[in-house]
Length: 92
Image 1 (tube, helix red, strand yellow):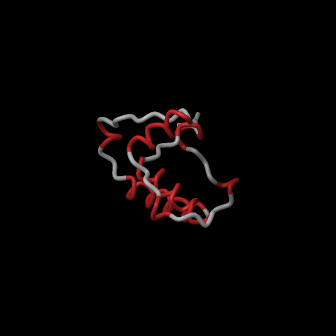
Image 2 (cartoon, one colour; image 1 turned 120 degrees about the vertical axis):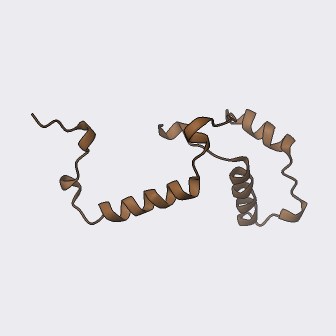
């Protein structure tokens, strides 16, 4: 998956929108981010909603993020020149 195919939930988009409005000193109480707003926002920005199936649909994103952070913590202990991708390394 490249950077142009980031998975975002509708809830995450709404939460970020509310935070941005607060930062702009606007009144969030009057803000209504209903499904119609979300649909138009997604159309305007070329976003699509897809249902995940199979293995990718059953993964808990919180656990995945925790695993990524743990891996980054381990990799920080090593110089980047000493880290190898073993599935691309051939021992001949």
